[in-house]
Image (tube, rainbow, N blue to C red; front, top):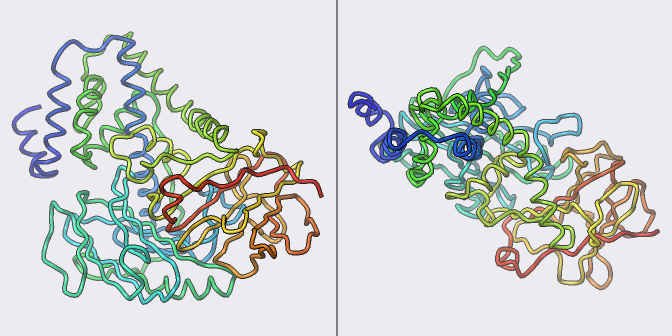
Length: 467
């Protein structure tokens, strides 16, 4: 790395991140190049480290390629878009989509100064705006839990270019110049969704140059380029890191990855690997990518076997620090997850006896009196098919929630859910229809109470039920 290169990087990314770059560049020049075994191991680590960044950039590039905000949640940089409806079974957009809140999305560029997020008085309606850096870490919140429901104005500011204070705005300082803003607004039936969207239509994002105007809003279909593979994928990670500097805390990991030519300003071809080591590296990256879904699924099933069929993510979810493995797993199955303080997620993959859930059977989920999911905002229970998508079921009854009218409790205060393909015909039953074949159940608790956070509460196992 030349002196000119160092000065150019210092000007563009700041001195703090430059420490990471220098550490990586220095490590790549020290000691012999890794042999095949070391190269393969480091290649898998590099994929685990960098794939969440590529996934977020894929979302960013797709979302911001449109000329105008639209109702799919797509919008140009420094503009916000909101969806007026829930995702449907026909839309295979994301795994395990939420059908309790409507989504808003914006991709912010703070390099020219603060971008202002505004929202109206939300009354008693739950909402949150989750701010994530380029590596999918949650770096801040605006919403019911953190900033209250009164009308708000927030200047989201990059520490590298703070700019002037924005009159009347609360400053939120972040250490990344590119921020993914993901909003969730509680909604229920069709009438309530209309009320929620009326509020969401008042959400605004204003860049330093002032409000944007959009005139050429012809229909536009974003094109997603193919994802590179093998060592080309590692070079893509390096290029992405150069444009999205990694956190300073990752310096030690980047120093290791630099040995195979992965890091800001690096390329695999310059790492001095032997042909055999290069081939081992390429194969290891391809194997890591192809096996990640199975590894994540295996980890979930192992957790489910230990906890009456339910699997819970690690406490580091959303605020990963150096837990790169969890970060990669979450990016694979739930990119953009909240931190536990905002929302707790548990997934049932097995029944209480450790057998796979299958729509050929009927099930009951029974919460004893006083043992319903403890959440300050609301809880919901949603059924997905075996791949994690919404199945086509009668009446689009995908979810039940205590935020909606109609939830029925038994006379003793207990809560029963019946999960079956056909209406069980049981008076007072809270029925969720099942798809044919394998399925899974998600329990979400928004603003969970302390028993959830400290692990003293966990959901009961789902039991086989005979009518």
